[in-house]
Length: 111
Image 1: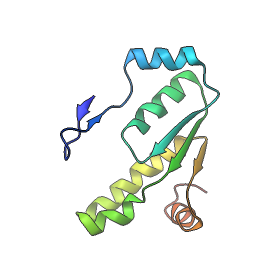
Image 2: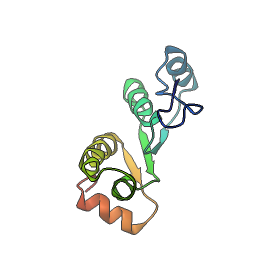
Image 3: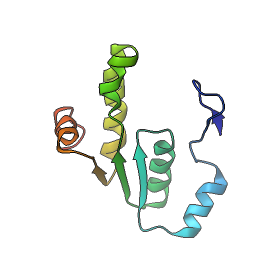
Image 4: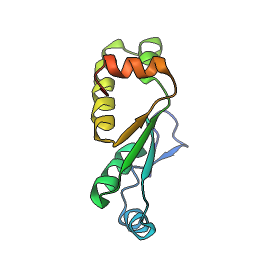
C-alpha cells in the first residue's frame, strides 16, 4: 500500500501483489465486484482479465459532478475518460439511479 496524497494515514492499494492475485486465483470466484471510483478498481480489472473472471462494477460517487465544486473544472473530462475506460472493460456496470444512468449514456460510458 501507499499513503493517500491528501490523507497520509489512509493506506491505498492497487491490490496487485502476487500474494493477492494467488489468493483470488485459489478462491476461484464466479465474478469479481469492484466499487467505482476508487484505486482498487484498477487492480480488480487487472485480476479479472488475468483470471478470465467476469467483472461487475458499481458506481457510487459521481466524481465528475463534484470536481467543479471542489477543484479545477479542467479535470472533469479526464475523469470521464478514466470512468469510460474502467466501465467499458467491465462485464456489467451498476449505477444507483436513473439520473446517473442517463449521465453515463450521455458521456458514452455505457450504451
